[in-house]
Amino acid sequence: MALTQSDIDVEIKDLQDVYDKAVAGGAPVRHHPVRDYPPYRSSVLRHPKQPLVAVNGGDPETVELSGPVFGVTDITEIDNDLTRRHRGEPIGERMTVSGRLLDREGRPVRGQLVEIWQANAAGRYAHLREQHPAPLDPNFTGVGRTLTDDQGRYSFTTIKPGPYPWGNHTNAWRPAHIHFSVFGTAFTQRLVTQMYFPSDPLFPYDPILRSVTDRAARDRLVARYDHALSQPEFSLGYAWDIVLDGPSATWIEEGR
Amino acid sequence: MTERLLPTPSHTIGPFYGHALPFPGGGEVAPPGHPDTITLHGYVFDGAGEPIPDALLDFWQAAPDGSLDGAAGSMRRDPSTGGFLGRNGTDFTGFGRVATDADGHYALRTLPPGNSGLPYISVCVFARGLVHHLFTRAYLADGADPLLDSLPRVRRATLLATEGTHRTYRFDIRLQGEGETVFLEFR
Image 1 (cartoon, rainbow over the protein chains, first blue to last red):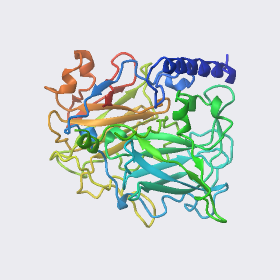
Image 2: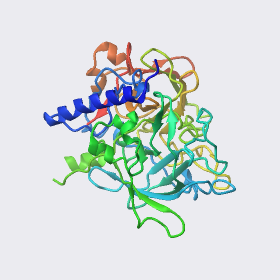
Image 3: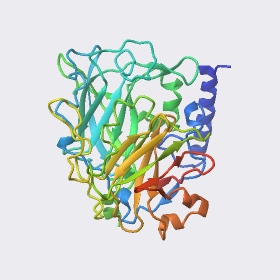
Image 4: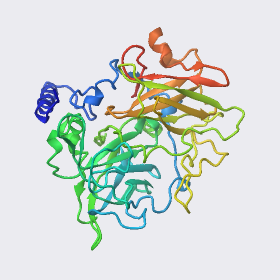
């Protein structure tokens, strides 16, 4: 029998209750999602059952405390403008999405690569496997890249993606989001995540967002409308800072 | 001690990253024709033992001389077309990125890492269904190593790439179940 949204809602609520109870009882807050999160069906066979093995980050020879670097040869000038890749302008609500890439000490991550990808305004990806019968936009591919500046700031011009259906259960819809892939100064800080938009009514129903069981952590995935970022007669501004987890070589130096 | 910022949570890469993250030459870290080139390759499997055709692997390693500085230019671009030029043929960037193919197979052509201790290539695994990436290491030699020595024999074996002919090393990644790969967290 096909799973309905209400089946998934029950599972989401149960796991939320377990988490809330654990935290109330003194368990640590979980900043990241639970890899074993059955309401997101694809996670069932794709998470390890053995605990992760801790590597002591105190050894400066640890390769993962350094990481890949990127530079001006890796991007072109218009890579951060997703509306200028084709002959015409994409359909949709034009946006400026900007924020800072920081480590947990609040230090900017400078000159590092930020990659994004997203659906078009109708909720369709320019990807062959995408089966959602919404129109493709010949003027929108939905891929962008940039390097952070000296303050760790990134900025993209794009259009607001639409929500779209997916096959997790009957009538499953993803809230509108932009995928982000970012690097820190250390490979340990690698992060792939998704940015959401304020007050999306689909939030409570989405098992991917709800796999982040901590409410405050979920809120950190939602961009803020920022009128100061909006550009007159051009775009609406959304601000979203990204904070990277994980030790780095600089972290060790200061932690000694 | 200042209050540390709270981290941005991870999310799955989803199924539709294929037109965004992989880039031509992502697995060609060694300069073309370099005589020391090795091939690290293998399959990524799920908990049912099925190959995963939509995983993405990021690789990071020391240069042959042990340097961990890396170099820019892994995804060097052509400003006139916006296309990809490949690496410049001299700098060793230390970074590779490969998506598994329809068989769940990947291949990385690189130079032997010169890190201190046993040589290894660090791997970061992403996939649809995996809500938070996983780190592991492909060791290219066996011997004394603080991480390997901390593991039971069966688990240890999952981090050892198997040397084959023509400078190939086979390294399979099993996300779950029998022979589950050892995945790492850095503290």
